[in-house]
Amino acid sequence: MLREDGTISRSKINSRNSVGSLHLMMLPAVVLLLIFAYIPMVGIVIAFQEFQLGSGFFDSPWVGFYNFLRVWNMPGSIQALINTVNIAFWRIITMLIVPIVISLMLNEIRRTFVKRTIQTLVYLPFFLSWIILGGIIRNILGGTGIVNNMLETAGFDTIAFLSDPRIFPWTIIWTNVWQQFGFSTIVYLAAITGIDPTLYEAAVIDGAGRMKQTWHVTLPGMLPIIILSMVLSLGGILNAGFDQIFNLYSVPVYETGDIIDTFVFRLGITAGEFSVATAVGLFRSAVSMVFILVSYCAAMKFANYEIF
Image 1 (tube, one colour):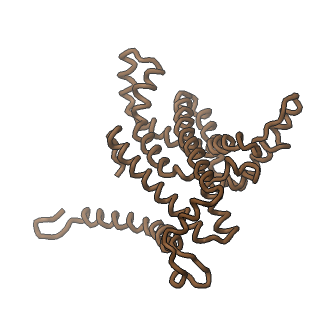
Image 2: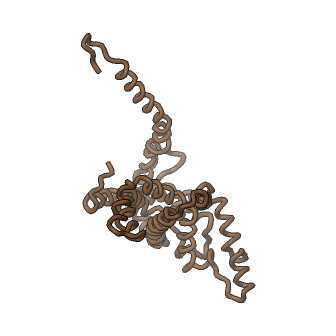
Image 3: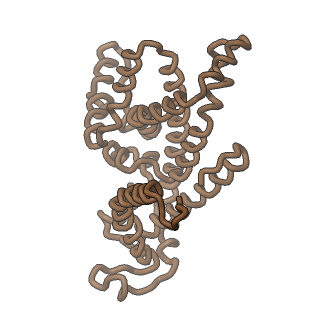
């Protein structure tokens, strides 16, 4: 604060220095964001060109929205869009319900050692890449995997988890839950620990049991985090998990397992259709932005929760 002699107190200077240090800590993240997120956006112009590697951005012929029309008329493009929405929708639903239920169950465990052990076990798959998990899942659910060997030994028919077009999307959805729900569970448990304990005491005085305490105290206390998770997940409605599907899918399941990302990969990397692949990626980003805006408005209107 300003002293009577016109000088600034040491506490004010220290406060400014600390704020400056925090901003300095953000600098590496900002630089990485600029390099990998904003500067590459220059390449969006490829979606409106007949891009040629030898000509570059400036000399490639301009074709306007022709690439978007090409994508629309390509065989398999509409099916890839439908598959993406279907898989992404169920990924969002399961990743909202399962972590919430597991976090509520873990919250009821009173033995700290048991609780922390379970948390660690369910959190471990989150640290493994889909390259590793894909191999594990193939060994477990493949045609000669552990599950099918057990079914065959017991006299049951084997299940084509990774090669049946009807089963493959659900294999993707539930293996994604297995890998991801541990992290979300910890987030929801943190939200539960932030609930005022006096609310539970008041509920007990009113005669509420554990179920009613969960329904009327715990869930409302978790609501802001639940809404935030839902809003953020809606922005990825067209993100069905490229790395996961790419490591697990095969030609027999293209009908239900081929998504926009894998479709773009085959167009851009395998077939060299850079302009068409960029057009598909731009379309996906535009749709995701619309969903994010809609989810922000819905969160404010129906839950009175403002994110920004």
